[in-house]
Length: 96
Image 1 (cartoon, rainbow, N blue to C red):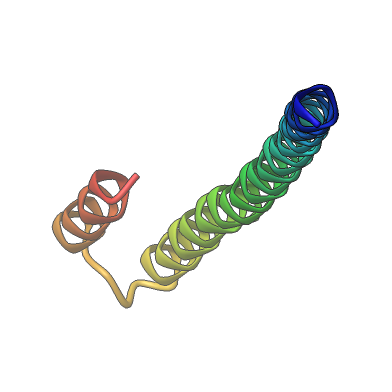
Image 2: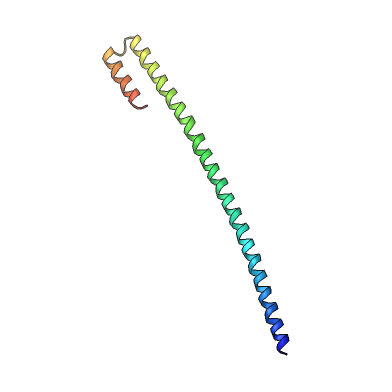
């Protein structure tokens, strides 16, 4: 009888060890998958931030350029004095 109990105990220990090893492998695979998902998500966030910042910069510069052109036109028409034009121009350029 002792031999059977010993064999059963050894068999149970081996089974637990195998199950533990399988769980560790599954955990490692799951962790690797999660790390990859996080990296992909961060990449998408970075791309989104970059795409959002680029148009704003160029449209902001175009906006300032357009405003400067309007101010120059107003000055040519005599609506703005030289002093007013210089003051408004400096305010626009300070925003850049």
